[in-house]
Image (tube, rainbow, N blue to C red; front, side, top):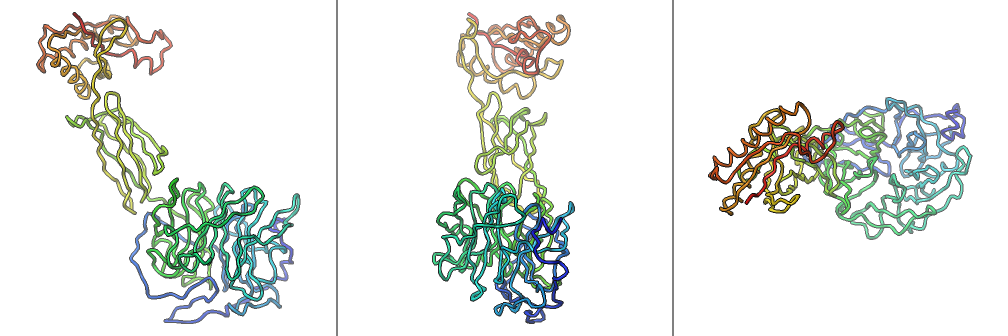
Length: 539
């Protein structure tokens, strides 16, 4: 059954894997692969930190003396490119001294371990070299690369369709129109929406040797005119192996350029509505002075990467890469700008660079908020509270390690409004808050009462009736007494701040005049609406 799933068309018993590599050369006591997609290392070293990533790499257990490189997924299996020698008469590529590359598939267990590789397809595998491939989201179309026998270092891009109800019969194989003479098209990748095909090519307009490009995928599976991804992604050196996170929000690729530790390093860039953001090296927990290529995610924080680092089996080896997310938090307080009074129950919203809401919270009784963030991302923190002007600040998570950022935000108050409500002229402003079952004015509400004081000082002839109301929880008599005390407490504060008591009168109405007459079926919002203080202008 496994053979059928992997489209095995050769007898496993006839597969003979050679016992040693024939293409390794020694230099400075190190071994380097001379396969066509590798590069000899220079002495270039750059001090690069984890850069927000905490990878653990484990040998995937399928490596040999030859090169094994991951190439994405098909039917929940990992597709692998390898130069294993198959059969006693396997033809050798004179450019690499290894067998011509073939496509294999490997089962993945729940722990991410890989099974023994099986040949993928007798139709796609030929006597030439097959390299990276990519599938449409419905896995009925494949985009694959193959070299000619005459030039195993130059790859062309093909498309094929899976025949309906077949076990791996790829039909309608065709050479795509984006191929050009003396141009090698390599390492294709299809986004998860199936609308974009990314690949590497050495077209004449490349910034470096090989650049990354993208073409739109049309309804019939053909691809549009390639577009260079530009200098945000491409450098004066080679870029290959494009890939995307499972939500298509992060772009991954291998490059010999940018801020690099040596050879091919893995990089990432945030994909936003305005394009690719600053490229970031994926850090020294995955990159080395050797080559790291072909990073493909199987889950949010788990995937596979290929590297020719020392202590491997030989050539390129496949490693399981698990990334423990770096924990980062942005926290602070929301304050009144003028008095620095703490503002509980303020709404705090975290938005990404495109303005999309990621998370929201309310400040607690100490006016503090706390939100999780990701290293090296740009955010907007938007804040709102009744009686205050909305505010927003930009924030950049500029650390690659576990960090708690501090950011206090100060809000400006809104002006009170004098208007007619229910045939009465009132000073209308946000609600006045009291502690539960208490009548002392909470500190945050002194800001609101200060607005009333300002209006009274600007209108010296104005007189006010300050009326307090409660919800219908508890006994009527208790609520009436509590509302009397709350109204009197507001008057006391206003008098203390320079307003004559002759201009003020207070009265409590308890639960007798609800804004929302919900009786015994009140929601929390209904109860909150009924707990209020009104400032009525009297003659």
